[in-house]
Length: 298
Image (tube, rainbow, N blue to C red; front, side, top):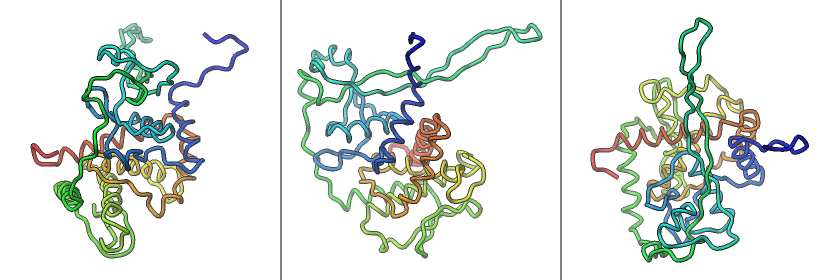
């Protein structure tokens, strides 16, 4: 417990939000995958190879980029010991979180028993493989697998095709129109490269999941620059980042990225819980798109 003369330690949501705000203000996107050179593009992985999800993807990508880690796998101090390894002395860990619910039984005003459920986040510490010594051989850095670029892009084309969204190409704008339930994209040839096209399509496809017949995600009607608009845009930005990692694509900044930063900062400063919520919405959106793939598809 803090002494009366000590400032209270910020809660987990506030600490996460302050970290994201600082990086955005410094011109860094915390959700950019740091393994685009030397390693494969992927989500951060647990010690058993299971991908992290939600806000933990953002937290660990951010840590890897800031500290120069190229390995995508993380584990706790105890998990390293179980493997016969150890974290090097003096190494500083990174924070990840998991959601839990506190259940309380109370008596309401009428004398009836009532159960209240209070969601909360709990933090724990993990270390990157590059901070650990003595790991089994299969944790050693692997040379990147060379994948035919055409095959990789074909996989993205197949993935988005199975989603079933109506995608029209024509004018120079990229957007999702909820009324007609249509994604509008510029011509493929108008993009710098194929990866930029699919990253943009992933952004708009995340918007597409908001429709009432899908995830029914609604932050209220908003216009460009206001908070409701910015909330949905941040979800789509994170969704595109998660999708690109899953599909092995580099996430390139959209040309209009800078125009959104100020509105994202405003939302995050006004609502210390929203970055965690936005990552959860993005995770659900990406899971929905994966769920539209044929059985057995990656």
